[in-house]
Amino acid sequence: MIYIGCHLSVTNGYEAMGNQMVDFGGNTFAWFTRNPRGGKSKDVSDEDVAALQEVLKDNEFGTLVAHASYTMNLCSAKPETRANGLDMLKQDLQKMEKLPGQYYNFHPGSHTGQGAEVGIQQIADGLNEALWSDMHTTVLLETMAGKGSEVGRSFEELKKIIDLVQCNDKLGVCFDTCHTWDAGYDLVNNLDGVLEQFDKIIGLDRLKAVHFNDSKNDCGAGKDRHEKLGEGFIGMDAMRKIATHPAFQGLPFILETPNDDAGYIKEIATVNSWF
Ligand code: FE
Ligand code: FE
Ligand code: ZN
Image 1: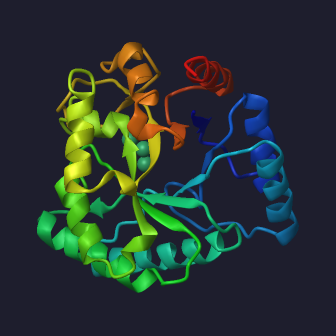
Image 2 (image 1 turned 30 degrees about the vertical axis):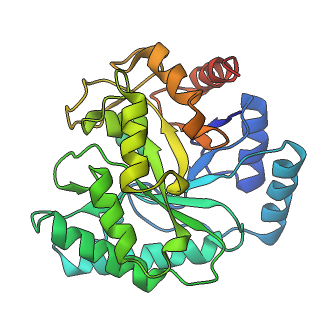
Image 3 (image 1 turned 90 degrees about the vertical axis):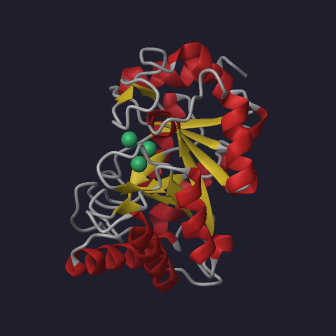
């Protein structure tokens, strides 16, 4: 089975997102914990959280996948950017405690010239400061396309971060299909092989969520430009094989495709028709 949804705007609060996803035909969703390009996060009321929880329960939603701001970079060469990123992470994780048991996904970071090894250590340092042993959120490292100086372009890099974090029982991985494809993992011709590699290097028990995107570019392009399902280089046949692969069953799938509401409703229906 599958939990499917897309990114929603948090402007009208939490309950509104739950109701909107019910209308869209989905049963999970993602939202930005603050403006994706930076800025403050709005407060959330206990009433709104309780109302959302009711919607989630009534409609048998899967785990939700919050997304951190793109500006949060735990491994920038600039110490102020790192400190700012750590502040955002700490605040976001405190806020997530109001809605226990969900996922919080973030881009590991861009090392901005320091090299991947330094980046990996700084990301782990940040996580070691922000995570605590009895928190109620699982923090997901997103697989990255490898654009610029992005860290997390390979399963090995993600595994290194995980190994350096003390509370790593609170860590998992969000598998972005566009990003892994762009990073050079051939999801079209070698899906089983890619997942075997993931299992060998990271372990499938860490696989918690999927960002379900086609790609505007070919495998290994290192670009990170999402495309609508079936309209990119991955193609609908491979997208269906991914969604129905045993390794992904029961995980929340989040669409980050370039769509308007009608487009998301259509893609959610398409994915649901595979089950
Ligand atoms: Fe992302
Ligand atoms: Fe993504
Ligand atoms: Zn992307």
